[in-house]
Length: 245
Length: 219
Image 1: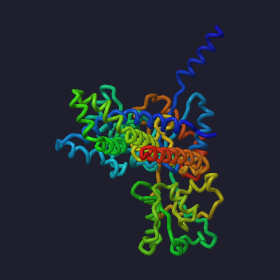
Image 2: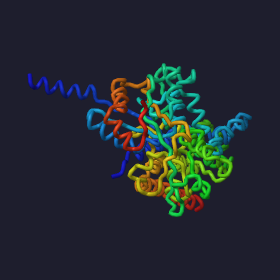
Image 3: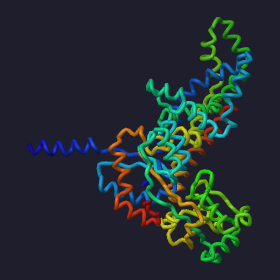
Image 4: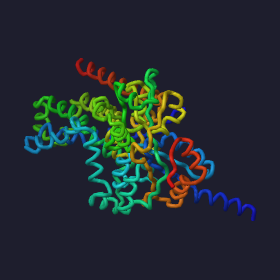
């Protein structure tokens, strides 16, 4: 009998354990390291695999049959489109990104962001065509009424991490980047940060969805639901994200 | 602590591509080198086009022709053929992308085989296939070897096509060149550096090998 129970436990682990492949927006790379550690402690039978990239590219690949289980977009637009086409289950917002002014130059004072942007020789912003943080960056410049004065100084990063790298490597003197990125161990304490007032740009709400073509819906839903759990919310907050109601 | 799986995947793709193109390339080159048909002139630019096209153009079209959003992609999927986001995808993309490197050196090798010895073989009653196998190929062996080496190293180095049609799936389609890109994004410069140095060493050794081959041929 005892043997039977042991065998049953082993079998249940084998049956329920899964590899969950997640396509995630580039700004999530660091917060997901912490979330993964927590998830794998709670569900040791599951193995998580991540692919990072631009949300728009993932959208195209998912339409072409990309074999992933969960999609974590940097916006709400792409998951909604997939849902409307019947390619995903209902998406849900997991975090709200914040925009920050970032510099590693000693002579730039970020407490006066308008002046800092005007004085900068190069301003790094993510490409607004594919990155939601880029759209927020451009609208911030409009918000300070300096877009036309500074537009020739803008350098575009392909995603938000590359944009932060431009600043960290001093190839741009200031950048408008994701606040959560600046709280990661790699960039923490490396420079000066000013949080852009949220009235200056449309909230960067980020949504996730389980893809319909997933081979293991239960496992995919397990990770999806975990993203909204109390423990996960604590991690989202510690990385400077806002929490959707 | 270095992750070897991207290298294994890169090598697997490069070796398979080299094997496929080694055979296919010879027949295409034979056609291009000896055919007087106008089709040879029409086909050649298409085969050479990956040399001048951005990899994103190839990746985009492969994805849109074979993806599930296209009728052909759905048909193939229904009969169990999956050409995207797996090893087949990497192989398909690499074969198309490296085709010019398999063909161009071999065509010029075939063309430089003296006409007289080819005709001598025909006069002796040998078939076209026998002549290709026993006369033309042995006389073009340096060109064929350099084509194979070029295909191999070019496949190891490709990025855009494999990223788009392979999908960067860890342990499945994340090749060494994509892994470098990922390490840099992760701000993991040490791993990026190690991987990049290994690829650099591979590229240099193939080029040095080609240099030696060139000397041998001139002798």
